[in-house]
Structure formats: structure tokens, C-alpha cells
Image (tube, rainbow, N blue to C red; front, side, top):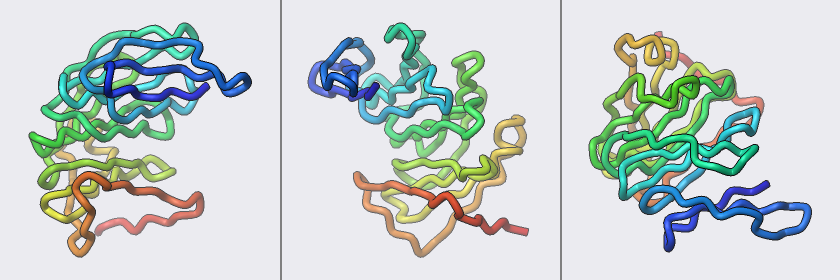
Length: 181
């Protein structure tokens, strides 16, 4: 299945890839932007930029589970490799919300650079990288502290200049991530 956000009518379409047909249309927040699936493909987390929330979808039934309020302008979304947390960038509050997938609640909020957009998690789950469009930098978050409720141990990498509305980060499968001492 493929999940597609439809910003024009505030829905998500579910496309069956074996027939290339839309099999469900699910109402979500205003407007839906990005979608991330859990590693086991049981839930799709939808960022709703205008309504400042996330809507997880049960992919077995293609129904909305709940609505999770986050910071203003929810834009970027990433799921940790173990599927226990969702990271949500909040562009207008310069933060990242940490959502527990077990409870579908916000369990932490981490300050980052100005206008965070893109977010990704390293393949081993130890770091989160956030592109900050207006401060033209990347914030790196150590997940062990951030997910345990301790100070996030975030630091900023200068020299990267992500574009405000086109910020994305990716890792190759063999990426080694340097850690700060």
C-alpha cells in the first residue's frame, strides 16, 4: 500500500499497489503534508501543518487512531528504527516533538534551530538530525537522553545551508555517524 497526503481536501489516499487503485480515503488534519510509516507498517503518522497535529492511521483498517497535538506548523516526521518514537518538527516554535508510539502522546519537546523542516533518525537510532531552514544549520540530537526525559544533548552543526521548504536528510545503509565527546 502507498499512503498519499491530499492537502487540497485534508485527506490521505490509500493506494493498492497491486491494482494501482485508491482503496480508501481517510479524513485527517489541515492540511496533511508528510507521512511516515512505522517499521512494522502497522501505522502511518501524518503531519498536519495547519491544524498543528499528527494523525496516526491504523494501516490494517485504514482508520484514524487519534489526534496528537504538537507545536505550530507540524511539518517533518520520522519514525525511529525500533518504532517506539515519532519525531515531529514544529516549524513555528523551533522545536521537535517526541511522540511515544505506545501511547500516541507527546513525551518530550526539544528546542532546535530556526524553522525546523526535515528530520531523520540514524539507522542505529542513536541520533536525530533536523534541518533548520531559517538558521541554515542542522541540529543533532542524542536520542538516549531525549527519549528518557533528560536534557536532549542537542548541538548544532554549522556550515550546512538547507533550503527552507526543501530540507531533507538521508543516510546510506553503511553510514557511520561521528559522536561528540
